[in-house]
Every structure is written in structure tokens, then in C-alpha cells.
Figure 1 (tube, rainbow, N blue to C red):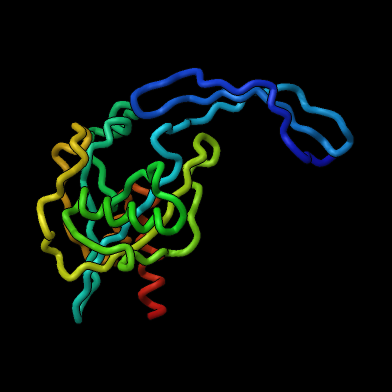
Figure 2 (cartoon, rainbow, N blue to C red; figure 1 turned 135 degrees about the vertical axis):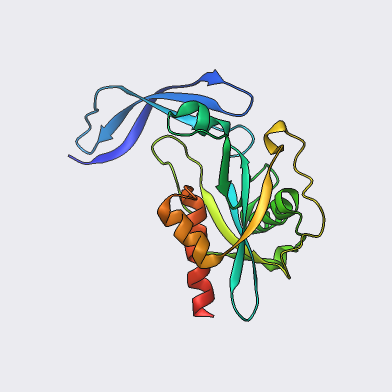
Amino acid sequence: MTIIGLDIVSDEIVGEGGFLAIRRIRLRNRRDDGSFSDEYICDFVHRPKGNDAVVVALYTRDAESIRVLVRDGLRPALMLGRDDRKSPFFTEVVAGILEAGDVGEAGVRARAVAEAFEEAGHRAAPADVEILGASMFPTAGSMSEKFWLVAIEVSGEQPDSDPPGDGSPMEEGAVTRWLDLEEAISACESGAIADMKTELTLRRLRDRLARG
């Protein structure tokens, strides 16, 4: 038998917070012989502000090396939800949620520019944003979020201004630093930077630059 569709029995929001909600769908698998599976529950995280995110590799280069910006910011869920995390700070590249007006590739570019300034203080134009291949689903079992991976080349490590942040306490204490691209990828491999989207974006950037 082959599954040809899903039959939705009910669809509801069962838990809401300030940032995320839990969507619960009761459904059955519809088979090609006309039969249905037993009813089951599919819970997944819903983010009312926006479903997808842009991940931004800010980089600069000279004759000797390519340098990339990483950001140490608050991620309390990792420390509070696990026994092996002692600090609320986590290293990753710049990233941000695509909001209601960020539609299509133009929206991805606009959001990348906004996040580059908000989180790192570097100004850019939408034309400076390079899309690093196809978008990806990082956690398909629990969230329908998609990551759009991009890069922006900047003229140097010095920002145009102090990063303004978004006004949230979650932005407090964040610091940025620059690493050699190969050093940053090695840090991902060793677990010193334990962020999947950062490693994938940096690897795609390296591949793109190698192609010229």
C-alpha cells in the first residue's frame, strides 16, 4: 500500500508563549486502496512571527585569508533544557526571522541586510547578498522552519556602527568576533562552535569562493 495523502481530523493550537506555539494536528494516512491508518497526533512548533529564517555569513578577505564573523549571543533554552550546557551564550553566525513583508528572494535579501546591521553593525545593500544554494529544513520532525543560507562580503572587520540589536533582553551581552574561515569550520567540527546552520553556511561559502 502507498500513502497518497493525509486526512486531517482536527487542527488546534494547544500551547502558546511569547515567541512560539505548539500546533497539534490529529490525522490519518490515506492509502491508495481507499483505507486509512489509525488516527495519530502530530505536534510541531509554530512561530507566529514568521516561519523561516535567513542565515548570514559576513566575510572579508585580503591577500592572505578569508575571515568570517561569528556572534556569541544568549540562547537560554540550551542551558535550561540540557544538563551539559553551563553557559547561556552560544556561538553562531548572524541570523534572523523572515517577517511578514519579507517575500521571495527580495525578502530574503532585505532581511539579510537588516540582520547584518542589527546584529553586527555592518551596512550592506540587497545586491551585496549572495544566495548560497538551496534553502534547507533543519528540524523537519518538530518544526516547519526553513533556513535560507546567504553571504555578504564587507570591506573590513570594523563595523559601520555599534550593533543596535532589536531592543530585546535576548540581545543583551552579545559580542561579535572574527575568525579565519578554515579555523571557524574546524571549530564546528570539534564542537567549539556547535551550531549546524553555521557549519553548513560556512562550508557553502568556502565552496562558493573556491569556485571563484
